[in-house]
Length: 343
Image (cartoon, rainbow, N blue to C red; front, top):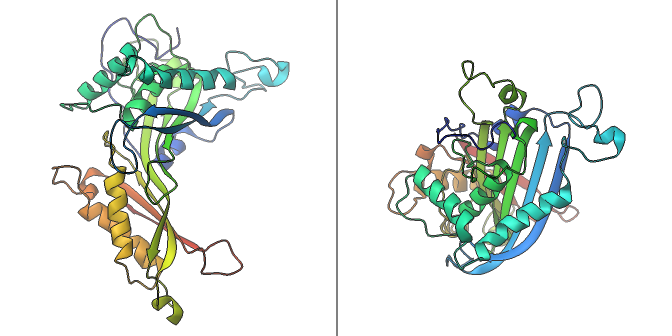
């Protein structure tokens, strides 16, 4: 059984710290052997649609990147597949990876509510986060389920959720990092879609060498993890520009907004999109620099989640706003300005 897999008791390990995506990848170090699969397509009732309605069937795209601690060949190899031309335990078959992800997603379609395993994972997550009610399946619930099937644990690594007789798809001791993205391409009224991404760095050999419980009783395989919510391709008519002609009419601005260190389980992208669009439509800035900074600050100071009075800057959010002006430079696809504000 792989290190970090199902234990013999219900001990809770310390959760890995929630950090920025950049920090999580930096903690993992440079990738040396990676297997990826992008945009596996399915359709399930998940999250909220473009109008903010829950429980509606919509397209879902799954992407994952598995980075191994050791290369596929050489003296420090964790796999000999780069030399033998045969798959072994030091890598992962991307076809099997794809089937595992899609098969896990199909659990939500069984029995009208996600099936036993999906419900266990979501119930465990809700208990861990002290939420009174789970209105699922939320996008975060799907991420939790897929992550559990891959690693055996919840996203922060603190709790084992697979049944004791099941082995995780991946061996945590062989991993350098793992990322998982659930994209909803039709969940935005004015954009190209919404996605929720989790990326984690693993303790790898440190975990493998920690079998002596007197040395290390923490069996959490993660060093750190990050979660980010992204709304991409928002097309918003906006009054912005320095030139006299740009002051006469609105032009189309394409915005991408990403919330890093995202600590919310509920699907809030519809409310967040409305705030961004309303802020941009009311703009009269001359520069993209000022507009992007204003949008980011507006999210950090004015956005609220339900009845919680806490501003997002107090949650430790890091907000990235990228703005493009497609028609500003005739012989370029577009100029763009990007800002990152917050913790």
